[in-house]
Amino acid sequence: SARAKSRGHSSACRHLPYLPFPDHFPVYVSKDTFGNWLDLYAQAMEIRFQGNTEVQKATYDSESGTWMVQMCHEGTITTTRPSHLVIATGNSSIPSVPCFEGMESFAGEMMHSSAF
Image 1 (cartoon, one colour):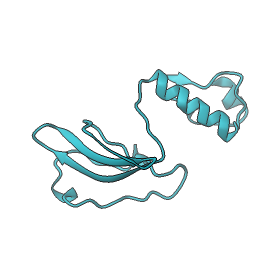
Image 2 (tube, helix red, strand yellow; image 1 turned 90 degrees about the vertical axis):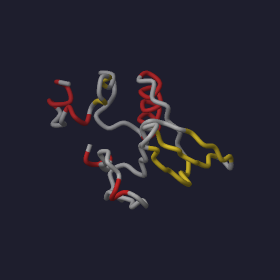
Image 3 (cartoon, rainbow, N blue to C red; image 1 turned 30 degrees about the vertical axis):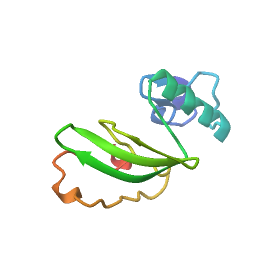
């Protein structure tokens, strides 16, 4: 936004795709305000997000084009079969790029979220 640029901040830090921060937001928001904004953003963009979850196993099925993901959330183990899998382990940190068995033979595109 013009307001963000006038304060010396790039507009890239003032919005998420398709949904800019409200004009009344200060340049630096509290962690709670930002967390609430991320929840609202996920809801508005219909993003099924689940935090505090340990992925125990993820395998790709090239026949169906889906993942089989086994995860543990609050002590409950569940399995889901999404067509896309995003594992986000931190914000504003040095990327930790995991190695998975079979990575070298995976035909699809792989990138760390820091390179997106």
